[in-house]
Length: 356
Ligand code: NAD
Image 1 (cartoon, rainbow, N blue to C red):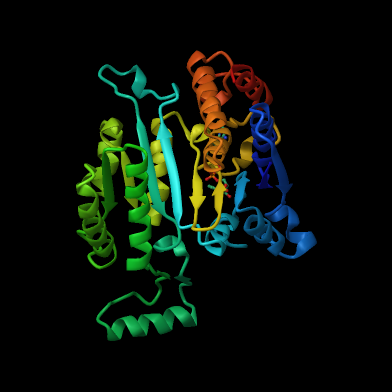
Image 2 (cartoon, rainbow, N blue to C red):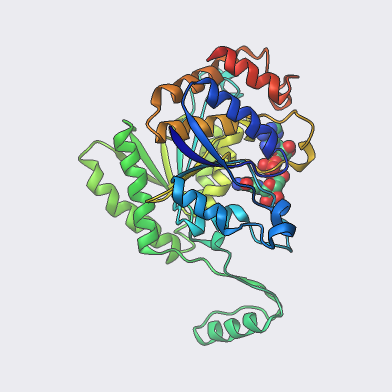
């Protein structure tokens, strides 16, 4: 039996989690779910949106799956999702984007299937949240340091810092190449803006080029692409990409672009992986407008559970879930509103279970 931490999340989280649990259980894989609530719901009773018991449970079980958790915009507590990745040093954010029959490209002449895997660095970059409020004493101190170093910043500016380290870059780029090697992938594309951010993105690119040389003898091709051009190429012809590796913020944005290419956020799964623990979750958020209606698409979380099963060594069950998803989406008889259907979350889960 596998022990797995289950964080239902909020918004549409509990609804899609219930559907995902039924699908996993229908595969016959024996899982003991260690349910841990987090987010705004526990803020009042426990004084924090991320109690230590949640982290302790993931450390104990090594594997977790979660629904989305709302982050207040502008004010309030910082993202629980980011805090979890930081607390467990889950430095790989792996986000596959694959054609399951829901993409519009499939309807275009000459369209080839999309099968992209994004490796997003998960701990550094502007996403690390090192920020200084406009008008604060800290921003003033930083501004004067910057002035001494020759950097000019306006008095009324808020400031954000973009750390990119050699250590952080090496481990994510190596993870991308190791994945390519283990999964018979042909090409790794490094996405960056090194023409403008010469020291941060420049370092990322330099290390990627260096590591690429080691893998050239294994037949893995390497290319680099400036982030804006990469976005254009993705929209024009996504099938030209294979494995992609990039810093945190570009990965956040490009993985939503890729989700859109294959049919939307409702079907985009993901994993956060460190040296000791792995946390599986959809790319999408808590979709507050859809919460409580029983209509959200649970596919992203269901495909995340397939990634989790593969990580647990249950490859057959993982493949059967992926095949069932492809089956149900291609038929389009029982799909949720975002894929043009009328099925509820539960009816869709029933269709997946029937197709298993
Ligand atoms: P969102 O992903 O929740 O929603 C974007 C759009 O996609 C909405 O129109 C929504 O209805 C739709 N959508 C998303 N998931 C869907 C699904 N499964 N089925 C059908 N439609 C779906 O993004 P947002 O509105 O920017 O964010 C809402 C909240 O979620 C914010 O508080 C944000 O911080 C949080 N968030 C959490 C995570 C996470 O838990 N890892 C990730 C992203 C955003």
